[in-house]
Image (cartoon, rainbow, N blue to C red):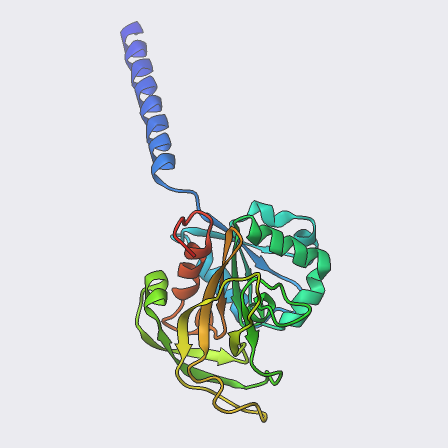
Length: 260
């Protein structure tokens, strides 16, 4: 009887030790997921946020996404994340919702090494051309007439963009009134880098014709210790281009030591 107990005890001890070792090995070989905050509040909506949640919270994704409110941003909760995303809607309303204190918290977060992704409205929010904008990137809109319409447009990804996103060079992407930008000439910000160009345009509602073609569709730059990517169109809502935002998140993350 006693030999059997000793054998069973030894077996259980060996099994437990191996299980602990396997768990430790798994935790050592599986890096922690990139923590992403997605703004949820006045000024954002539509299909973009649900699509981002689905993609960035997929079981196999290297990211973990949580929604964050204006109150949480003002309270400093961005320090719990690696990257913040402001998605489509209205950049001015997003700015109004988080307020001056919230804008200061976003600037502080990125300046200390956090990543910023702005999609459509979030790209407007990041620019340096408005009193309410974050002034994270050295870009300004080329016209106050922003209601250009909705269309699938042609984009050409630059070599710099290919290094970040991978995928095809020439793609068709949904666009819905995102910013059309040029340099803002802000003396305290470096020039932005173009990651993709618009190669076609939509110009409804008496908006200027010709200014969208060959303008930046996706552009990036450093802000102090952090990184910023602005995306004027909507790859997160375009079949086959869902990989672009996750790759952008990886690049702006403080865990990616690559140059801005």
